[in-house]
View 1 (spheres, rainbow, N blue to C red):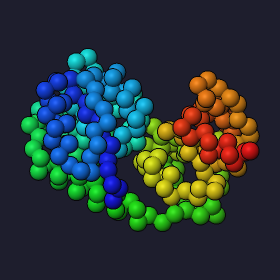
View 2: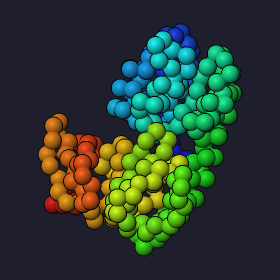
View 3: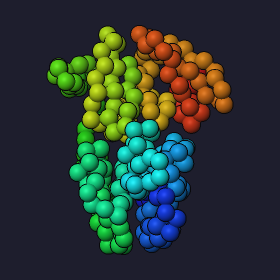
View 4: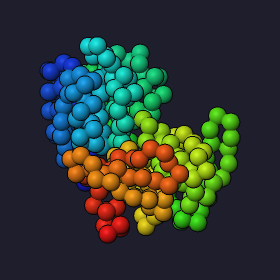
Length: 240
């Protein structure tokens, strides 16, 4: 279990946000790093901070919590916090960790954190891939094994990941990017952005871009992939 989870609270009601933040501050393993009052502000904060947990209200002015999840890739876990329980089924359709009904109580948060801890412990038992391994992929039509060395790029799309192969095939898998990062051989696969992992065997060149970012050109991939300043040092060191 990690020492502390970073958290963002998204709720259009100021008093509701403050109450939940006060409750979360009672837990030593939770660090509230930001708060937002609508989808636009939440999107900016999540993209900048990549929190471990997003406590998300559903009904907000103009756009809902579900609208937010269609606009931003959340690497961490989503916990819906709503005044109503009639959205619970839809919440779990988007792989929410939990669904809490207002007013949230301290013991309810404690149960949620226990659930998250158990889930992480289970994920940590996954065996790491070897570069010579085969992985199982599936889409609406096909199910097959592919060689891991054929994977050139993995990109997150919501709670799913798109696996791109060197023959042009793409598969959408229900697996978060964080799990890929923990299992892939680090001497061959490198995280270059919060939404992308690249196979360095297929990287052809790097191009300097704005704000210390880079464009990464990948063999067999028509469009360059962005590499953010945060992740640039690892890949640049391998090419130096």
